[in-house]
Amino acid sequence: MTNNLSKKMNGFPADFLWGGATAANQVEGGYDAGGKGLTTADMVPFVPKAQRGLNFAIDVNSDYIERALKGEVEDRYPKRDGVDFYNRYEEDIELFAEMGFKAFRLSINWARIFPNGDDAVPNLEGLEFYDRVFAALNKHGIEPIVTLSHYETPLALSRKHNGWYSRELIPLFVKYAETVFNRYRHQVKYWITFNEINMMGHSPYTGGGVLIDRIPGRTKEQIAYQALHHQFVASALVTKLAHEIDPSAQVGCMLARTQTYPVTNNPDDVFLAQHYNDLNLFHTDVHVHGEYPSYMNRYFAENDIEIQKEIGDDEILKQYPVDYVSLSYYMSKSVAKNPENYEAVSGNLVTYAVKNQYLDTSDWGWQIDPKGLRITLRDMYNRYRKPLFVVENGLGAYDKVEEDGSIHDTYRIDYLKKHIEQMKEAVLDGVDLMGYTAWGPIDLISMSTSEMSKRYGFVYVDQDDEGNGTLNRSKKDSFDWYKRVIATNGEDL
Ligand code: BG6
Image 1: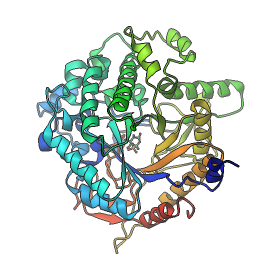
Image 2 (image 1 turned 180 degrees about the vertical axis):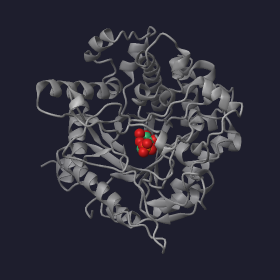
Image 3 (image 1 turned 60 degrees about the horizontal axis):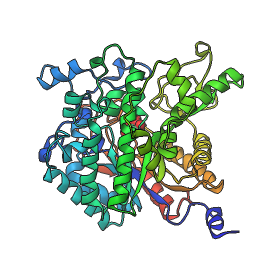
Image 4 (image 1 turned 120 degrees about the vertical axis):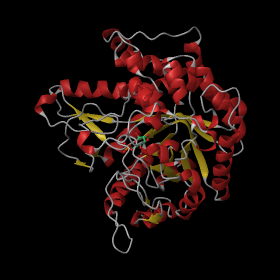
């Protein structure tokens, strides 16, 4: 038995990166503090539940943005205030340290560094904010895992260039990345280029600041694949840059992985599931294999998708693949050739799915599937042979604060425990897994609904959907549970 194998047979490797994950736009607040510019996320209003349909996708159009900037709408924008991590990061990081975090995934808000995205020089106050955050993490021996772009395209770039639909964003993003790579090279080793890059197909505005109403005559899909191409090239270029600036840097891509099952074993359903899995894994295929997979050729032709590439793009993709593959995993989905025969359900970045009779659902209707995580990790590792990193997983749920202030979130513990068990099985199956950062270790603003009441945290934040509350932090039952999980390297669940 080799050392490696015997190490894995014991479960998680000793250097496994346990921790939690957040995004600047969902926790920081301080949306106009320290010279920060507006981002696309700052313009996403709160939409009450009654007005959200199944598979509600956050999106705004250009008319809405212009009216909102002129103060002509009266919406609330919870992501502008987040949970005040901007001012309370020390206290929050101390709580993460108390849980024993080895790693903390966060994003740098591009518009804190370049408020308009194309400024000649970076904003010093923004850089200094992250200096302080990384110093606090460093003090506690917590490894930062930094996402360069987590739905935080500077709004100015959306208005001026229509976001990632334009190639102009590639050099601007490279300049931003160069700035932060140089500044934080001694503090940060692990980088992620684009969070859930497949968001582009779901919401081009959220994924890349693209306002599709400004591109008449083209389908959302045609627009999204063009914008994605620009992000793929940018991702490869910054991967190259990170390695040049710091040869020990590790750069990963990130996918919202939705393991897709056929609802029956009818080959028509099986084929459809395979097709959806390919459409999802296409994004990581490009990042790892450095080329567009051939199975997309027919899809592009049949959907009239013609991607404008420049000479040299293909070589860039080929030369600079990622070092590791990171993913979010919340749920699986099922598909049917005849969906009208089944109940429709919702989910993360899901526009179409039918009910899987074997699975429970979360309060938000997402289908909970721990074993799907093992299946996904095995599939992805077989496909890529690169280290994998689960950088998001968790349960969005309503929490009840008891009179004595305690919060008994057994449902969250149950969800996480079952997923960690399956992750461990995947490691025993031979998957090279770098770490696990649970989503929202502290309650934050929901990406899809901008609600506060959809909570993921081990740490409770006293704030409601209307933005009322003290913002005080308190520990839920899951806090001590996760602390024990980390202390025992995933043995005591
Ligand atoms: C992922 C995103 O899709 O899911 C996060 O990367 C997001 O930003 C998370 O918060 C959970 O989704 P939601 O909609 O419950 O916040």
